[in-house]
Length: 234
Ligand code: C5P
Image (cartoon, rainbow, N blue to C red):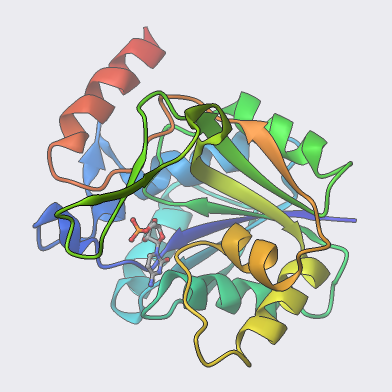
């Protein structure tokens, strides 16, 4: 049974306010995407990697694959407008191999570690779906849709921040999306949410993430990432 790292790099990164999508910004001499792919490539537990990107970045990604001699990269796929459409491109690509273990990772989380990938793969021995997450340290409040008033405060001890990778057997994530796409109200920002909602009988395991595994979202996250990277390399 093979293991695949799916690197999701098809977003436009509009929240950074920059013209280049965040996964193509430079961090310590390499793009954010290169850091993410390299950690998966270096991991002995990962057999294969596919990168999902936007059509206009296809050539650039091909160039990065060549430059870094990433022999495990077997495909560069075209993503969609929504993140789940990018995930679906990879799910469809492995439709011939339903037992494949797929770890979906945000290219925009360049400080994913070997430990996290190892633990995610280990957890896939016991679960058909897993998510890397860290416990919430702030109290999290639910507000009305305008963000003017609180509507509820959840018990913090039960709340976690989701990160990536998120892992699934191909057949599990394919089935979750098969059902989801028939639902006219379907909407999601992540793959675990799709499994949780449409395959409630599947247990989604939690794998401890790390504070370093942040997602580059706003332009000033780059300074924090640079600092964390310099600490890591020391
Ligand atoms: O937009 P967001 O911060 O949730 O993106 C998380 C990751 O998913 C990023 O690495 C981004 O490139 C990727 N993504 C994608 N296809 C989209 C939207 C986001 O591959 N349509």
